Length: 555
Image (cartoon, rainbow, N blue to C red; front, side, top):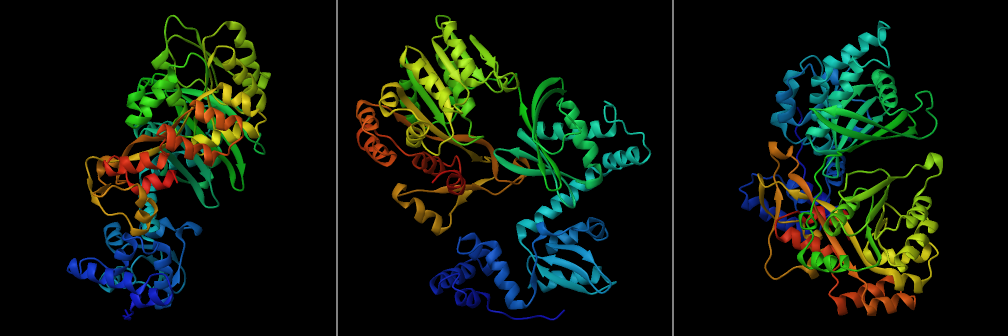
């Protein structure tokens, strides 16, 4: 193999991707490590450059093509011909073989010792090298191992399809066994959702674990039709309709425990994307203090809950834990002396001492219709799962002004933005000022795995973004990755939040149409309001989560 000498640091400076000062710091760090770390690793780890930018410059210097492994069809049968141990040690993926070459994607084309071993193992043809990203190469290894473990079930499904013995309704078919295996795997890993996504080459099954999607299975495209049809039958939706979105529900007993699944389908270029939300009806309700709120936030929120009437909003994007917070709050204030009614879509948990109503859009029983009718049920506390339109908002506000305590949710980025959203939905400022008692905005961040936790220095650019929130002495941590956390470095999730209590000062600002920035500034000055980012940084300093994770969800 022809060996080339390049000065990658000088090339990055020349491209303007790093400064000369950063190069000198990295060279000193490499020297301090006794040259155990490669210069490229230091640039990436210290946040000077991304994996992709580094790989593209390296490819240009070596005159080797950069390849995106997500944009091509990898020949897994070709991979199976070679030692997986050797491929992993070389960080190399043989992805295609033609008449002249075996095409191989590598992370480090300068690791000549590893490449020579690889070249000897592929003795039949010469290697044509490509450069790819380390994360992408590791992901292909994961896919390869997943395909190997599920090969038996997939082969059975193919035999049933080819021999015409496959019956889509059968409970004993191989495809039903495969669905059960997919579901069991997701539940075992505490996933909240299962995504079934067809592409031009195959079918990917991913689970959302701690808020992040991870690939669990990859199947040949030819079994997709049988898999999607069987799931649609479970969800009691039309299997012949593939041009528009549909919603369904079903239940399954897994390990003697009943789970409900909310099914959603959407037509895509290569077939229907199916998403199953896992709902555990027997899930234990959390207490407010178990959610992970900061001490100042929980004291403020508990004060808000003591309000006899008014409207309380919990805000955040989909999947930020709003419903769990609402249930914890209702669980905190439930009483035999109060009548509590909830309107939900769907009912996720069974709440003691509450009358829970499931909306049904198919028969025009919407949030607004249900809310209008339950006011005649003489409730003290009302929970509306989501304010989706101005009609529901108006009825909820009127209910709060007539002696009811109303809990509901909105999709906004922060607490002050909820006020702006209410005005955009057509509500008068004086009504907001009179009815609103508090807003909590929240996000979920992944917690560092306690089994592989170690001290960590985040990239300097990242620290620049939060330096005004940092104390004089601080430490940050991260998880290295171990078997207990699936090598992700994270295990479980917690909340970061901000709580805006509507004091007389804030109420006055709302009534005179002050913008959200002025409201937030005055709340910080007068009421001790702290933006969500501060809560996140404090949790990172305490070693609960990482700075990277906080900045992923908050700004």
